Image 1 (cartoon, rainbow, N blue to C red):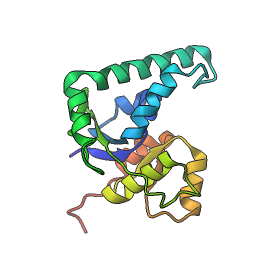
Image 2 (image 1 turned 135 degrees about the horizontal axis):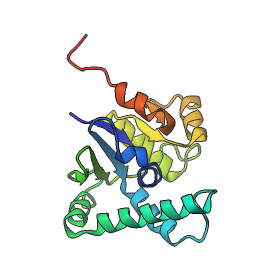
Image 3 (image 1 turned 90 degrees about the vertical axis):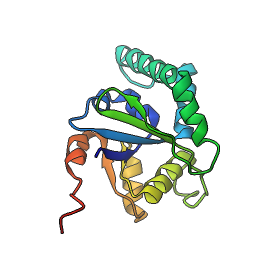
Length: 171
C-alpha cells in the first residue's frame, strides 16, 4: 500500500525528491492547485531565487502541465471535476509515484485564517484523514495555532513522513 499526502501540484514540481520517494506514494492534489501551475507557467515573477533553479522549476511545471493534458490523464481529471469532492483515478508518475486530483470545494470553513487553497488542503486532509505535505512554515504554524485536526509535515521532513505511518493492524 502506498503512503498518501495532500499537497499542492507546485510542490511536486519544485521538490524533485517527491518524485523519487523511497517507497510508493500517492499525492492527493486539489484541482485548483493544478490551475495554479498555469499561472506559474505564464508569470514573469521568479519562483526561485537562483535563475538556474527558477528555469529548472518552470521546465518541470511545463512538463507536469503537458502530462496532465495528455488525453488519458485529462479524461481522469475531468471525471473528478463532475462531482464535488470526487477523486480522480491515480495518474502514474513512474514506478513509485501517483497523483490523484480531488475536486475540493472551499466551504470557507477557515476563510479568515487560511486562503482558499490552504482551506482546500485542510478540508481534503480532514475528509480523507491524510496528512498535508508543504514547504510553507507559516502555514504549518497557522495549522498548529488554529488546532486544526490534521497532521502536517514539512517537505524537509519528507523521509520521516514516509516512515511515520503506523501499521493499522497492530495495536
